Image (cartoon, rainbow, N blue to C red; front, top):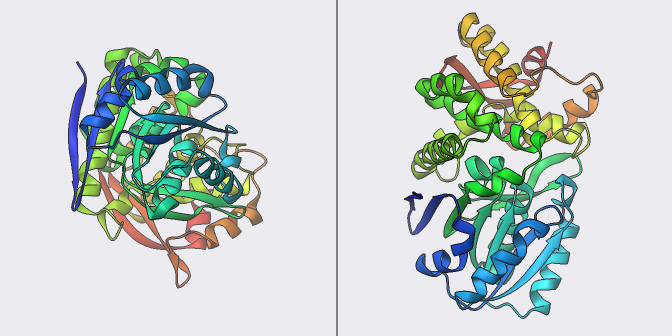
Length: 359
C-alpha cells in the first residue's frame, strides 16, 4: 500500500507519496494535488529517459496534460547555467505559460535543476518532483533546495522553492546501477546519525535486505527518511537553525565533489567520506564516544560506501572549495558534529580544525 503525508510550509503545502507503481498514476496524482492540467515539461536525463519518460508522458496525457520531454545529459556536469539556458529555450519553444508545470523525473541533478527552472521561469510555476534514485527519494526531492554548481563550488547558485507534490515510486530503484543505489544509503544513514538512534539499529539489522533491494525494506527506509526530513523543514524551511543539521557530512562532501572534479565522486560517496571525517571530529571536539564512531563507520562500510579520502584528492582545491562554502563567515563554518548517535550539535569550526578531521 502506498503511504502518503503532507508537509505544511505556510502558505504552501507539499504532498508526499511513497509506494510501488506510482509512476503510472503520475498525471492523476498531480491533478489531485492541485496542479493545473495543461502545458507542462518533463525534465529528465539521458539515463532515465529510456526507462520512464514515455510512460510518464503517457500518464500525463491521460490526465489532460500537454507534456513535452526535455532531456539533459546525465551527471553532475549538467548542473550548470548553460544547461539551465537550454531548458528555458525548450520551455519557450513549447509555449509554456504561468499556469504550466514542471515535472522533475530523475535523480538529484535533475531534481535540482528542474526545481531552479520552476522557481524562475515566469517567476515561478508549479513543480512536481518524481525522483527515480535513492538519493532523490530519501533526500533531495523534498525540501525546496534547488540550484546549479559553480565551477569552484557546489550548489552556489540556487533558490528555495517547494514542490507541490513528491512521487517516490520505489519500483524505479530496481533499474539503478549498484554504485548509484548504494550512494543513496549515505543520506539514509545520515538521518539516523543525527536524529534517530533506533533507525541506526534498524539499519544495522536490515542492511542485507536493503542492499538486496527488498521492496518492503526500501519502502520503509524511504518513508522514514522523508518523514524525518519533513519534520525538520516544517520547523525551519530556510535553514536558520535546525535544518542545518541535515548538512551532516555535507560540508566536507561538497568540497570533495567540487575539488575532485564533478562526477568523479558520486554525491553519496563524498557525503559518506564527509560523515567519516565528521565522526572523527565529533570524537575530538564534541565528546562523541569512540565505540559509536566505530559503529557508524561500520554501518557505512556495510552499505558499501567509502569512509576514507581517495588517494588522489586535491588538498589546495579542497581548501578553496571550503572557503567558498555557503555556510562560511568570518573565517569559520557552521559544522555539524555528533555528541552521540541520534544527537547532533552545530559548532563553529575553522578551516584548520576541519582539515584536521581528514587526517
